[in-house]
Amino acid sequence: MGANLPGVMTDAIQDFAAFVVDTDFDHIPEAARAAARIFILDSLGVGLIGSAGPWAAELVKTQALWGCGDDARVWSHGARLPAPAAAMCNAYQMHNSEFDCVHEGAVVHALSIVLPCALAEAERRGGANGRDLMTAVVLGVDTACNLGLAAASGLRFFRPGTAGLFGGVGAIAKLRKFDRETLVRAYAIAYAQLCGTMQPHTEGSLLLGMQIGFNARNAVVACDMAQAGLAGLQDVLQGPFGYFSLIEDGGDVAAVVADMGKKWRIAEMAHKPHPSGRATHGVIDAALALRAEHDLTGADIASVTLAMPSLTHHLVARPVGDDMAINYARLCSPYVVALALRNGEIRIADFGPEALRDADVLALAQRVKIEVTDNPDPNALTPVDVTVSTTDGRILRRRIDIVLGNPGNPLTRDAHLAKFRRNAAGAAIPPSDDKIEALIAQVDALESIGDVRNVIDNLTASA
Image 1 (spheres, rainbow, N blue to C red):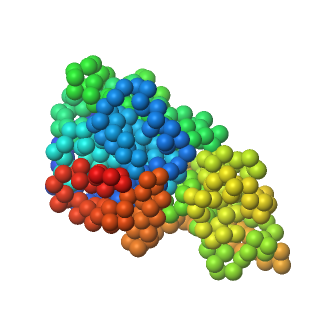
Image 2 (cartoon, rainbow, N blue to C red):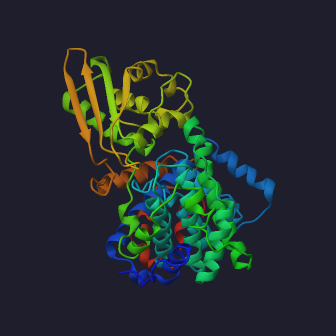
Image 3 (cartoon, one colour):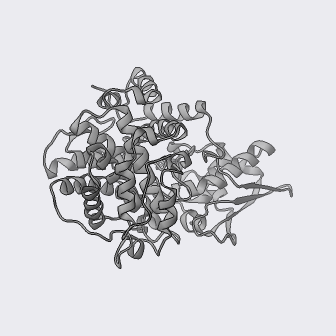
């Protein structure tokens, strides 16, 4: 059980603050702790491979234009930056390859802001142990996911950024031991800096991941300002221009407040086994299953039909082209289904410039059609159906209700560790094999780590 909470107060931001301030490590059940160990390690690996992604090095270089500081390190690169800048760079790295874990019901990549914020804070101030980090991450994830789950409609703004911002603030505040009043002001100051439009998603721009970075930076700044005593707001979530009036189209906040300390959202997070938008994973799973069951090749396939809910359609039903940007292709279901059917896997390399011009894959992708189902849930990503018509007249169908990586269909530990090792080794400046194995051991025993900075030491090639 979590800490005792009052009923919904004047504005539910008070309840969110009370939960973070009053909940300690001992309140967190073992199932949530186990999930935290899994997804912290997964997120570190994704942040490392993201260091080799587009714009990562350029983003680090721009930080010198805005002042100096050595609070915290950028993973892989090892550059020392002010904490807001380090949080921004690491958060961008965590999302720029579309490989970061997600809460499917909330539609929030919660750890992608929460973990970079928590580690930048831990490195900046020192003294944080593994239990402190785990508590901060679990509470930050709960904060972000509960905001997403409370939403009454589909995405108006980029929810991984907008809700994730509040999660980052909650994690930092827990490490700093804020009281409720200071945390509410931090949430308010963060809300005034919130950003995240869906336009980069629509265009397939890498500014999508940059919005994760912006909100991580803003979370650190908001906590610094609140600690200095700057003014905030009272009705952050439910005011006439509050979060659920402006950023979301309404929401049932009371329902998620009632579940705080009972349902631990980190235990509901989903792995991403493929480096593409999560909304593509259901049709990828179906395509891979059909390929394996029927020994299909690209030449066997006359046409493919994908059937998906309205949100999935909105996110990833986009036409394939021969001039696709990297992030557009990661969110293009015809392209990733063609990759799955032709190659039997989806790799980060499949979104490089040369791969995106592969004539055989593009030709197969052009034979993919998409339909919208009548699923009434505006936030549903599944179920999805894939139907393959073969050149010899067969009609092959596969339905996916629970996507691989979901808590109801989890990755095995071997698959989880294989993903982490592959991602860590693919960093721009990869840690040594010894450091990669040390990271696994450290996160497996996170509660016994005396100083989190010892974990961060293994995220760079040098100490």
